[in-house]
Length: 140
Image (cartoon, rainbow, N blue to C red; front, side):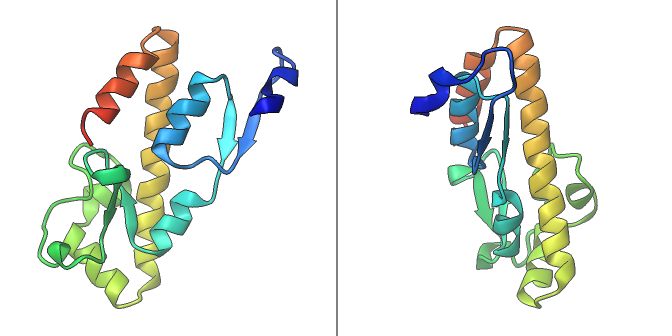
């Protein structure tokens, strides 16, 4: 980010390859306006799903502990995946190598990040980004 100071302040600032939650908070704090990354779908392909309460904000749905877990990925999440499918079913689909598993996991991961960004934008408008970051990092 050493070249960041050279960028025009009146133009959007785009940074590639940012997808981890910790990185998102950091680059937003530094003034990055746009970023994109393949991480949400890459994680989905390997059975890793974003979760606010999990270590590094990810659960590994392939883990045996989810075999009979009737809960959604995130109780508070309103995505199609969380509203309609359990962790156990997602694990079953992934272990059976069903393509639907990747689609449902991708839907969740993308929705999760979209929701986070909505909250970050609101926090910036209300001058509460530091509080939002503290809320997120006190749950891990």
